[in-house]
Structures are given as structure tokens and as C-alpha cells.
Length: 391
Picture 1 (cartoon, rainbow, N blue to C red):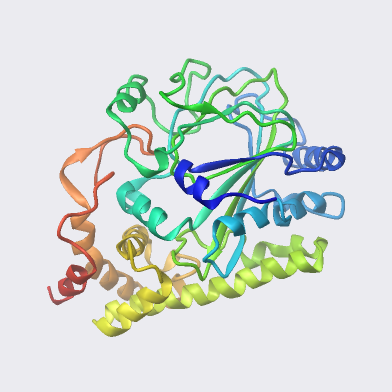
Picture 2 (picture 1 turned 180 degrees about the horizontal axis):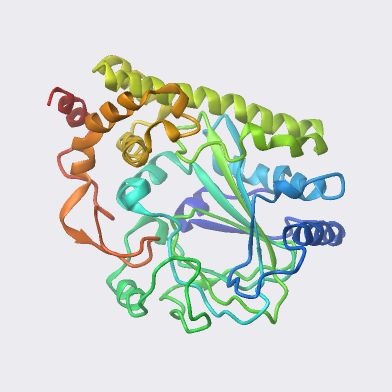
């Protein structure tokens, strides 16, 4: 299955027809239903507005391994590789299953799958994407006809328009999954949006920065949508969310083909190397080692354009980290070192704030925040960060 990277970069999504061979659909549906029964032996909860099975690898055995193998097919993983041509290795980053609720729940909100207070200003993420390509891709695979998803083509590469902000702000909302009452109308199609009309066996691959909308969580239509994430290693960009499935969660790989097991195992090796590089960056900051810092940052994010976005990711991680409780970096740093790192990153953290709290609808944030939502901090880049160590 061939895709056009230029079209994807321009639109922010690509619809893929016939990802699943019609002769394989029934076996996949059967495997998925086995997983659903294991997840909810007593049935899907009545109050679940968006029933989602997270980490469905937990239900992989001989009878369901073919569902996991779908993640590694040339029509899925192979497509992600085509859209990340500068990456040396691409692998699954996360895997969900989205199902229909047992009663009418209505639409979800138009949103981007991101939170600037946790990930940095949208402008930096967009510049990084356009200059260096995607670091992570999201794919929805429909096992039955599915018209739930809508997108606004091209919205991944710009802020919200004034017209969009007016419409998005017209319905007060937060992003907690326990919202009540369910079923009330949450927006209508945004201007220039389109329905991603998937037939059984079709898929859509997209960047999670795009404005998108789950138009109807209904009990009237059977929905089985596999949602996959793919990340790159050793590409021009740093993917800040880790390896996806940890080493202690990989018992399921014994049910997979040797080729598939190798993909998951190699991802662990590359992730460990990536963690070593991040540690080297933090050590250089602690030691005020400018040369070591710049060398390791370049290794983590080889693409020179938008390298500042990578540094912002590291800043966000340090600021929200609870010292040695972090399962990956906790054993590598003492609590005192975490405190010192937080102090060294504090000038950048302050530069990412504004005097007046900001709010832009469509982000996964509950309300106004002191952090910049779109613009990068003016006059504060990598050089200014290094200079701030002397203060």
C-alpha cells in the first residue's frame, strides 16, 4: 500500500482503503470480541460514553495474536514507515480499541490531542512537524463501517481561526471523561471539515495535532475501531512519550511471529539508548557542560530546525517530574539532582509563561493556564537557556 507523504504533510491525514483484506475481517472481528469479553466480562459499563480498551496487548494469546499482528502489517506499520522516511526505525507506540457505548451518548468535542502546558506551545510543535516530519502517527482501523471521525484538513499547521474559536467556545466544556450529562449537543461540523467515511477494513492515518471530532457515540451502530500509534527512533525528531509497551509488559510477544517479536525487542534497545542520551543532556546541564549539552541535544533531535521544541519537552518533563518516583529516570538521578535540574530549567519554564492566563478552545486543558498555548517565547532560545545556567 503506497501513500503520498507530500499529501499527508499538507492535509495532516490520509485515508487508506482496504487496509484489511475482506477475507480476514471476520477473523479479526472474532478476535476483537474475545478481547472485549476479557476486558468487560459483565458487559461494557452503562455509563461509559466512549468505551475504550487501553493496552489491548494484555488480552493477547494464541487465539487473539492475529489482532496484534495487524499492527505490524505492511498496510499499517509499512504505511507509517513511508510517512517517516528519515527515521531508521518505526514501531508501535500505543494501542487502543474504541467501541460503541450501550446507550446514546451523543458527540464528543472538537479538539486536538495535545496539551500545551504539558507539551509546549503549538507553534513549536507545528514548526517541528513541518521541518522534520512526524515523530508519532495515529491510525484508526474500522472493522465495521465507521462515520464517527471528522477532521479539518490543514488545521495541523496553523492556530485556530477566529471563526473556529467562536464556535468551539460556544459550548462550555472540560475534558474529563466523567462529564455529565451525556448526550447534549457538543458543537456541529466546523467550517471546511469533512467526515472520514471509513468502510469496514479501511483506515485513516493522521497527526494528533489536527482538529478532529468524534461526531456521535451511539448505541445504534456497532463500532469496533482499532486505534494505533506509531513512533520513530533515530529520526530527525524526539518523541517524548517513551517506548509504549514496557519491558515488563511484553509477555504477550511470545504469541507473535519471530519477526514481530524482533520489532518489539529492538524498540526496547533503541529506547534504552534514547534514555541514555536524555540522561547525558541532564548531566551536562547539572555540570554546566555546554559542549556536552549541545552534542547530546543534537543527537536526541538531529533536525536543526525547531530543536528548541525538543528542549521544551525536556523542560516540561523536569518541571512535572516527582523526583525519584519516575520509573525510567528515578533510578538514574537523586532527589537533590532533580531539584537542581528543576532550578536550571526554571528560566525556560518562566519564559514559557505569560503575565495573563491564556485559553484557546480545542486543546485538552480544563481552563485558562499561565503557559503559552501557541507562540514560542520571544527572545529565548537554546543559547539563552545555556546562558541562564550562570544565574
